[in-house]
Amino acid sequence: MNLLKTVISTTLSVLGALWLLIELVRFFGGPDHADTIRSFWWVFLLVAIGLIAYQLWPRKRIEFLVSGRDIAIELVIGDIFKESGAVVIGSNTRFEINPAVIAPNSVQGLFTAKYCKDMKSVNQQINAQVRAFPTDFGATVTVHGTERTAYFCAIAEMNNAGVAQGTIENLREALGGLWSYLAESADKGTVNVPVLGSGYSRITASREELIREIVLSFLAALTESNFCDRMRIVIHPKDVKQYKIDIERVQKFIAHSCEYTTPAPAQTRLGTGEG
Image (cartoon, rainbow, N blue to C red; front, side, top):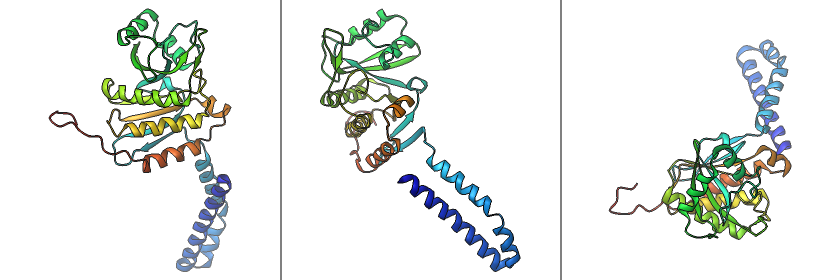
């Protein structure tokens, strides 16, 4: 339906422009000049085809500004590790990082393989920040890898067989804990977020549903603090195709949420130099 609407509206707009130009030339220059313009109708057809292709071509990066705030949500189709900024990684309530347990193609597995050559150091960083295991959902730790920082957030439980399992309720609780942690402990800047819960957490929700949960939770958290300048949601291109994610529908949801799910201004604590 959107395809047909775009084709019809764009074609009519270009033909309308052609007709207007012909009439203007006829009025000011006479019918001979108008006929000359009319003979180039194929140029206008090519313009229409180009405009239609441009409008229908999937955009791999689009930014949405949160209404009334100097904060943006960005939607990117690509590789999260090719984006600048810290990365949020969905982990488990034990913060298990053993490569024998963690899938190598998971976001956590890819991060540790690429940026954490010394797994002992990663364990030391986690243990220095966590008092007891298992943690609550939403517990978050900072892991400094080689030239990359990640925030590991507990979004699922792990059983004795090393299998993670989470629910949508677990994810909602985890997101609240994640945003609170970022507000208190993270550097203000860009934070890259994958589609949390879509992989080995085994949450029974579509990727589009998970993206909606992330967006709404983020906007709700902004009522408390401007804890980052930009949240970048990164979807892997393979996921878009394999799980038939309707990117246009996701874009419309984010745009509507940023415009109308407007967070109240974060309160500044009196007596401090914070802004």
